[in-house]
Amino acid sequence: PSVMTYATVSRGAVSAGYPVVQTNGPMTGKAESPYPTSTSWTYEAGFKTMWLDRRLELNGSVFYNDVKNGHLIVFNPGQLFFGTASLDYQSKGFELEAAARLSQNLKLTAGVGYTHAELVNVPTGSSTGAQSGNRVPNMPKFNTSVGLQYDAPMSIGGAQGRLKAAVAWQYVGKRAA
Figure 1 (tube, rainbow, N blue to C red):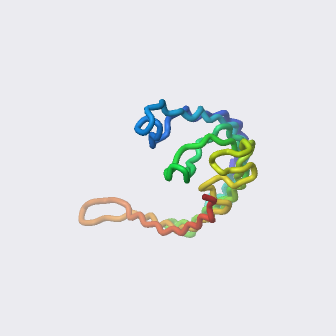
Figure 2 (cartoon, rainbow, N blue to C red):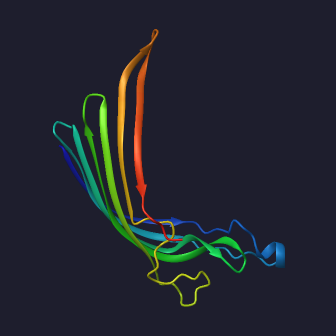
């Protein structure tokens, strides 16, 4: 009753669309080229556990994502603007989190994650400047967090309520541009 394991396989899609910044219409009168639908397969396995009479929780997961035509924001130096590129990428990693009830009103939380995400199948000479094996933009390799939460009943005058307070620290690793 205090351990749950799971595994999922999911298929996803993000609809096709048009760039936010129109460059062909205003300058040349040409129709704007849409970017294609992005599709993905996602695989995840993990666990959720409770220990010490539910005072300690420990959860973890591992994952793998395979994305085709992922919509990524890229800088086009020739036109001096950011646009959308459709590139394939894969990511894999893990997440681990814990929560400990230190008292009836005080809870300590912590987490750590790692993601390896890289571009794959990039056409040679892509106008984006990307190459297969490059890191996926804006995806940090490491992240971690620590937090403390306080929650207690409180009354002011005749009104009943709860006092809730939290403080947290989060680290997000370097991200590729």
